[in-house]
Each structure stands twice: as C-alpha cells, then as structure tokens.
Image (tube, rainbow, N blue to C red):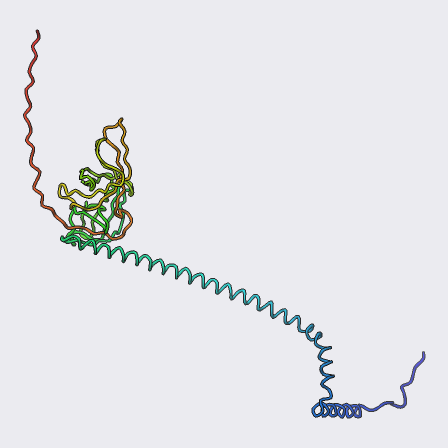
Length: 299
C-alpha cells in the first residue's frame, strides 16, 4: 500500500502575512476612494451587476408582503363597507323620519288653518287604531269624554268631511268614516243645488248617491257639500266629487258613484267639531183614521 509522506517544508506566506497584506490593501483602497474617488466607477459597475441578484433575492419577501397587504386591504375594505352600509341605513331611517315629521307638520298647520274657519270649539285628535271588523270603516282616536267629545260630532281634516263620532269612551272615541256601509251624509250639489243622501260603499275611495231618479241632473265632476239638513253636519263642508253616472232604464234609480275629497284613510290627525246645532224637533205626524170598507151586496 503506497503512502505519500507530508511535505517537509511549508510553502507560501503565512496566515499572518496574508492578513497583513489584505489589511494594507483595504486601507489603501479606502484612502484612494475617500480622497480621489477612484472606485466610483467600479462601485457603479458592481451595483449594476448585483442589482438583478438583489431584486431576485428580495422577490419572495416583496411578494409575501404584497399578498399580506392585499388581504389586509380587502378585510379593511369589507369592514369599512359594512360600516358605511349600516350608516347609510341609519341615515335613510333618519331622512324618512324627517320626511314623516315634515308631512305631519304641514298637515297640522293645515288643520290649524281649518280650525280657524269654525267659530265653535274644536278638538285635534290623533288616530290610534283602526276598527277590528274588516267590513267596517272605523278608527279610534286619542280624545274622548274627558275632552268634551260627544257622539254625533262631525270629524274633518284640512280639506273636508271624513266621518262622525259614533262612540265615546273616557279617553278615546270611535269615528265612523263616511265610506262605511252604514253611514249616510245629506249633501247638496253645488252646481244646481240638488239635495241627496250620500252613502258609503265599504271602499275607502268610493261613495254612492242613494235613490237618485234617472232624470236627476248629476254630472261627472259635480262637487258635493254637506247640506246642513237634520243639524248633524254643518252646511258647506266639502264631501265628494261625482266620478261616475250610470243611467239604465231597467232600474228605478241611477247609479252615481263619487270620490271623497278628504283624506278618509290617509291622515294621522283629525279635527273634531264640537258643534251642536239646536234644531226644533220633527213634528209628529198624525195618523189618518182608516176608512171603513163598504160591503158589497150581491145582486
């Protein structure tokens, strides 16, 4: 087995000498670069060569940072979007409240203006409930006997007649609207002065004149107001406008439909007129005695 003996003499400079030479070279390069700027070109060349390597080495870190920033930005955007959506809903609710208050304020101003037209005492009431029976047109207001509300009192809005007080509680009152089937209002045609009875149909947007002869002078667009007969309603309150006239010779009476002019089912505040008309009692009709029938004798 062959064996090569180690070299007997060590060739080359020692490590200390190498260190010393490198140190001197480094000091010389630092002095020449600091005073004479000899290495600027070399530094720029090295920077150009090393720059792609630096970019390649930093690419993973940059990519990870951008990915993390992307997800953080998406999460922040979702959170901010949710916050803005919630704020938008709150603002929309606030705007709707302001609109409702503005409409209610305008309606109350109109009611106060209507209130000044009547010298008698009036009561402003707010609608609380609707009637439980779906086949009737009734509402409950927040004024009752404690506010001197009595049965039979007419109820209006800023435009015209909407109903009549039919039941009174200590702090509440029931109002039967003119569109109720059991309700009837004596009216008068402004165009020609004809009087009639206007009845409800159970529909909030429709009324009907009762027992009108076929030759009666009613036309589309005629304005109907309260006639004041029987002393229940004051005369001159706007009630309805004629919207349809049908005359059929097969029937005894014409079918005349009308549309209420007041907000029968569209307002939250109404005006109760505490107006009591003292009308003399209706005279008692004397019953006519029955005439005895003559007996027929046979021939």
